[in-house]
Length: 287
Image (spheres, rainbow, N blue to C red):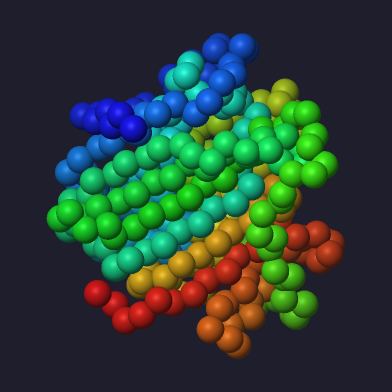
């Protein structure tokens, strides 16, 4: 695999525009290319803004999901390139898995690498994984796997992969009111300016009744509710079931009786509607 090192983080708005203009005629295999940034310093102002928008406590310790934001521009740059076989517009984020190998802080200098793998059929189209690895001082300290679906020709015999566990059927541990502006607020921090998150009009043009919250914001908001321990060595697996329309009120439910915590968000109006299910497990003591 060829590794291409970038000096700066790609700007996402031009990449989304490029992807919209070049989505036709894509086919073939995944590119044998990885994108990399080396010696990335954490901007403490950006970190604090992220912690605030996701409801993490302000700290120099990087939240469980923060490296995903640092690597996401590399994901988009890879998917926006003409060599990528699936059009970026219309990709649906189905799952996300993260492993934190050691606690990270704003003092760490990070090397980030992103590549695509495991293009495969799905009952509703095709799936692909975008894998992000983070190293510090030559040691792998964080890794994430984002699974995206491109809807298309159904394949009824294709495997669905691991399914989400049932959401705990218990009273809510908390109520989260998600305002209409939430998509724009998270976009300002994450750089993810996909129009489905920004305004009802642009979301409707792409088939949604209203703007929707970013999936990784809902995941981060759920992890923030579990406490500061999520920044320690740990793993998480998130299944995105239904988007959170903006504005909305959702219920946070948690079952932490066992070694694996199961948490999620469900609709306050219709508790049978699950938006997100998450499993979380601690791996050991802080580094």
